[in-house]
Length: 142
Image 1 (cartoon, rainbow, N blue to C red):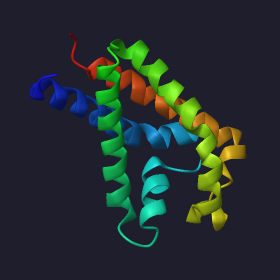
Image 2 (tube, rainbow, N blue to C red):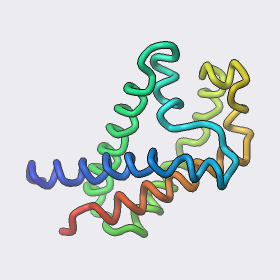
Image 3 (tube, helix red, strand yellow):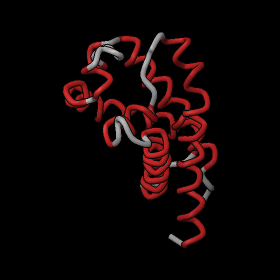
């Protein structure tokens, strides 16, 4: 893969992750979910420090890495992006039980245990659908 293509697919993934963050308040209103991707990630690393900056950076980097993997698998388009993102969500969802044990917002009661909450799961499904669709649509064609 050329350096230019690598940059384009990584930027598509990062941009899609940014769109997810932007629409997350609306997703939370629809689903009743209470967590955010930025706090989920940043709260694990720096719960009392610069968690917003760290969480946003981690979320955008994860999006970029997903964009690279999506491209390497030869996948294309918004539909394939949504399916790939939902597959990743389903594969990683069991790890949420570990997050429930260590995340400061779950431990404090600010968030419900994510693994057992239908609204938190619905929020993740919708967020991944948005992310995958946007990432697939922005990814360059072959």
